[in-house]
Image (cartoon, rainbow, N blue to C red; front, side, top):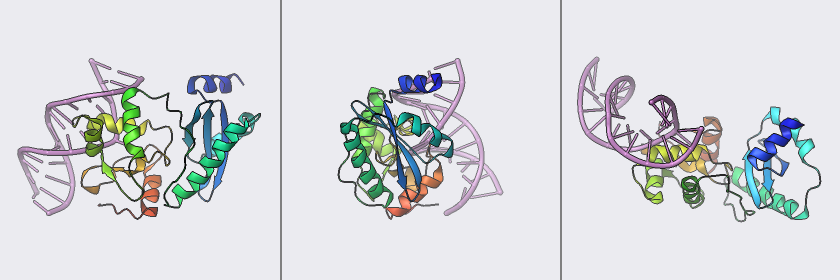
Length: 177
DNA sequence: TAAGTGCGTCGTT
DNA sequence: AACGACGCACTTA
């Protein structure tokens, strides 16, 4: 109990709801401002859901519908049309600027870490961009998997490279390696 | 040409 | 003060 409350406070999660997909059960986290986190399927985390998923405001339920739909589309490699409001207040200024760029990368398109750094305004901040990508709290919907290393190399992925490869493949993106 | 090494540079811890 | 989801120049074989 105490552990859960601590997690809620530090992470600013008010509600956590599951999303069943063909790839497993994702967990979506919401604050009063919107979607603030999305976790890849993880057996260990499943048990906690039941404890969180009580007294869900109708607004959050509506957001969750949108998240669910968006995730279905994203996992199918289709264009994501509508997203719920995102609460990215947990990020730093720099991270939010990076995440904004990521949201602008269309389905089936990619940018390199260097190109993202360009967009953010400092060509030399390449490694910092990599770190910011890794800190993305809403993977898949904020498509950090569309950021590759130079020369179409895979680069890294905090959720595991298998996920990155899978997501890219479904959008028809070719990797070099 | 492919694979490996070194180092600059920036935000975060 | 140290560490990356990088990138580039520069070795080697």
